[in-house]
Image 1 (cartoon, rainbow, N blue to C red):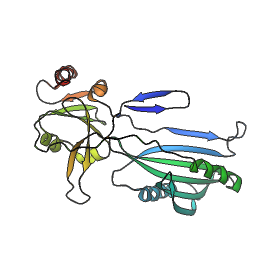
Image 2: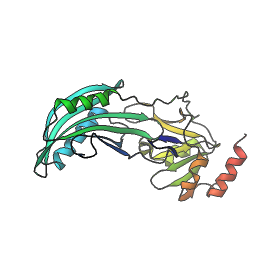
Image 3: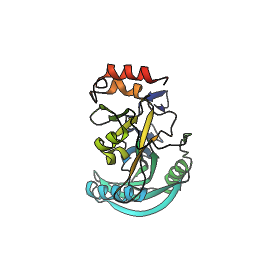
Image 4: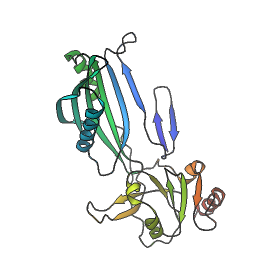
Length: 263
């Protein structure tokens, strides 16, 4: 379960939820357009790096923003992670909008890669006064680093029961061997965080790519995160169940987990 700490409170969400949150900060209550700082989030593909993502964002803005022009692009680091900073402007409702955007990618082996963009916006120009404010905020960023355990591959000949949760269809499927799981799961989608995986005790597992060339070899591994969602925590989110007799419903799976929790 992911714990989200907000300004007012904290809350827990199962790993099935995708983070699409956005934060907007202004310097003035009376003049919100003076300078704004926005944090936005989106998902990245498992084979994307920050340079590729930044280039895609620029291409999208070239299409969608009128009079879009990039002034500078440079590689920087944010809290030791590689990042791309883009400085650009475009026309909007007769005025000129200037933005500086810093892009980073965070990698989570359970839910996949996340794009985080830090965007400062000024009307008409981006003076040194606001540039200093923007730079001070970016320099202050410290990413949360979760303590992780060693990840161990599952025996490729294991005939134990395994489960997958498809985050798009909300289907929980049970498999009678790990090779059956490999055969029926879209492993490329799994690398992008579109599945959650669990062992017979309901503990979290995840898929990793063992090489970077075709044909790609995959392995199911134990979760490196102690806070990863368990199967019992996502059972209530399932809309459908599939698997062998005795494991094809929420009630059957609950009974199975109860029998195996102390094994």
